[in-house]
Length: 244
Image (cartoon, rainbow, N blue to C red):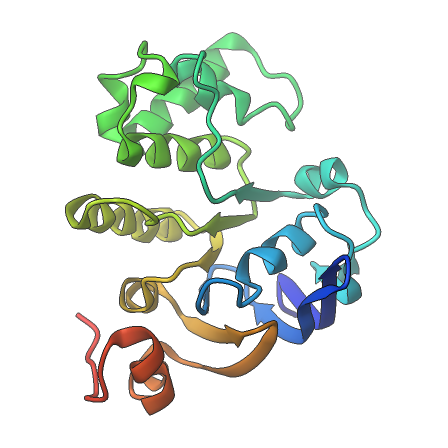
């Protein structure tokens, strides 16, 4: 049974239909990526899963329907959503931002909180030296790492990342995806929305391609890299591309 399953899911913003009956599944322990251009419906899919937009069809988590649940209840089930734009708290320190990620969990002793924050610093060593810095003073890449660390502090069963590489320098993108690989080895399931198709497929077990709210193709990473339509639209060419 998949950890997450969407069955013919629809969603609209007023008269604009953003999702037109998409079906995807995510197995526990996998990294699954949603690919597509701006306006394809990728972010809406994550917002539907996390209860931020109303959706038709069925959204199942661990076999149980969640589309009628509140966003707060969905977080408590173990679904963490790191939205596009990072949305860290600029007036709080790095450590305080990370600690806020645990707010959906039962209150824990200070020693445990400190230990778990230290664990985040092991995953994101650049953040440790900035532990007392205010959020607004961080670079875009540092803010993105902080947003992911805050999501992980919820100890989620499913971590959803929305355009984590957006606006970042190539070297920072490489570092970020190395972190995503590390998170996966720790057993966290990841649903990744990303426009950088090659980077996304380099860490994914499976990919889905959306276009104007519809699912147009899906497959294993190498299958999608060899798909002429995917190459032309998202990889800038028509020659087969190999994963590193």
